[in-house]
Length: 450
Image 1 (cartoon, helix red, strand yellow):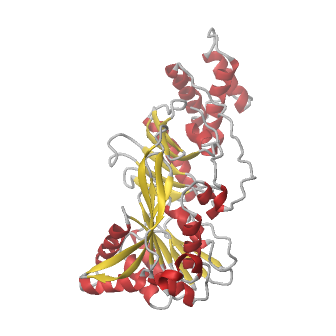
Image 2 (tube, one colour):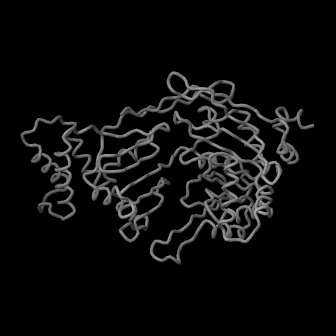
Image 3 (cartoon, one colour):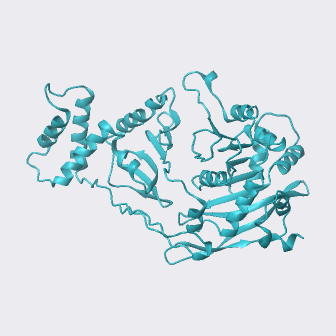
């Protein structure tokens, strides 16, 4: 599997510096070991002996590993690099996280999915690829690896608690589910954390949005409009939220609330809050809703909720409607209209007795802008819709599109072809932004809104 970072072309019209060269990452040094049965036999015996402390006395651990490998490969003409591969696998069991150690180091891999011992998938450039170069010995091996990951994090996973959702020390998110809930055996999913922050220039360079869209979003954040970012799983909602957050002034007090802390803000006055699961005692759980309510007592200038999923939606809207302008959040949805419908449903999930018309009025007053990001069929992410919430059309909330991406077809390389459009120039959002003294949008919207 070829793994290298290739710098994508970028139009000069965006005025973004493209002189910085992207590092070329070579193919990983692990190779496919054709005889899986022999490989698993060696790994299993050596690892089990280490677990059972059956290493001969007065023998160094690595000398023992080399001795076992030599013994197992006696009479087999095996290239040195494959022998080294076996040694590295065992070393990764001791000092790393087993077979996925190299994948965690590979900057091109953004997600790792272990479905079965010989069924490991990775995401590279937005596309899923089955990795034939690595494998686990059996389901017990996967479970052992999961336990090795979660135990230092203070989490447990067993038949009584067969699910775990946690964050690694580097910020990567891990989810694991095991039997009896998983009928296939232990399943492990890791969404890797990027140590290099993506900027708005990176999104421009990748064609995620246009310069006009970037200026518009920056103006919305600086003028303290409330913004909802929506999209499907893996579409890049958190990335967009991180970038939007970067436009917040350094003199504001920002409180972030997340299930697993992923936001990485550079401002000096940031308070990061994270939920707590009920690992041992069901009474010890702290939810997003608990943290949103608590944040209102912490004198925030901005509240950023990583993702709303339930009853906390009402508390978030309440904050937006009671003086905490400029709040940001995300939710799973297939589009802007669907996002507002889901938000309505979430408010009702909170158990508060409130009529639907009142809920819609609450949403219409709270949300100013909805940003929809989509992962396209070629794996690339694009902001396909930026809309404003503009009153009501009958009993339904009216959503007016401002910018949109329209797909026109596919290239020969099966890449999505399309264009960004400015859909509406006459928008009420422009007046809100202008009233805050931000004039960067005058050339784009000024004539149409006079």
